[in-house]
Length: 107
Image (cartoon, rainbow, N blue to C red; front, side):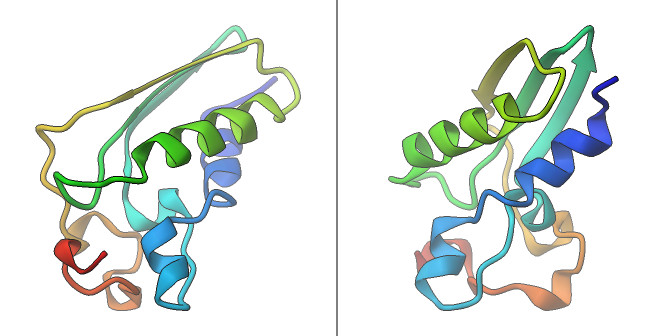
């Protein structure tokens, strides 16, 4: 049975483009971009946020997240949305001391 932990682990294989650009890649789950993730009967509902309001790479990030989630055994459907009202900060990170991107506006 597919669970939330499997999905979050898969999402950590999707690297934040800004962190890659500065040479310190970090997965989107560790970065704190996952607002919510529910898994029920193989259906995944995911809500993401961005590190800044002007994120121009969100489309690429959504495509990569969708593809990675769909590759997890047992996943039948994926719905991803972005909540632009969430203000990202390093407090959302699993390890805030590992912040690779500086301020959200740095990318």
